[in-house]
Length: 269
Image (cartoon, rainbow, N blue to C red; front, side, top):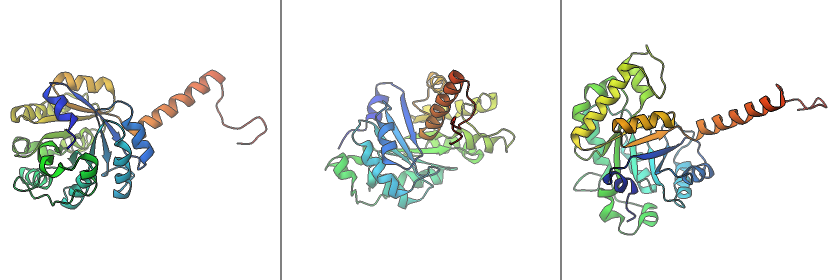
């Protein structure tokens, strides 16, 4: 089986950068995978895609050395196992609120006797190697998302769950839940109470020997998170990067030409 590069980098004490794909398109995934990220996550939860898009996206990413991850829609064994069979080397599972849910999630990730994953690695045995079944339990990563007040209340028990490899922080939902809507959702939190929550999650991960990951909006904030001790940071994503680059290009054109509209001199569009 192809070794999981994330495990190798973390064992060397290196932090990793994760890309994010929300556009259901294989070419977009191929472009993102070629940009130098250590891993790229396909977002099946909030992304504009489903399994029929996920599979070719994972195939397109294979040409690079990037580690393919998938965020599944929910804690449901069918899609978790299907994403693994399609070629995901790690799963990010949203809305894990207690130790029981964390244990269920971990059990779906591993073959017996360490879990209850069903055996049928249709594509991944081709993409990752014929010995996938024998080695997958040690290479595949299980990340539980902490993004609710309930999750924070049960943080210690969740982080101590056997079979869990890390916690992935969703700061937007976490902010909404912890502040009961007092603060708007978003990344790169600067409020002292939210920074304290992030550090609390990080400390729980470190105490249990698992990895801590954070979704960020900018490389500057991601670098801060790495300084705090986070092992993996996601910096923006395909849709935001596309929109930002397009907006910057148009704004620069307007600045250089003094133009403010899109009509041609002949009155057309």
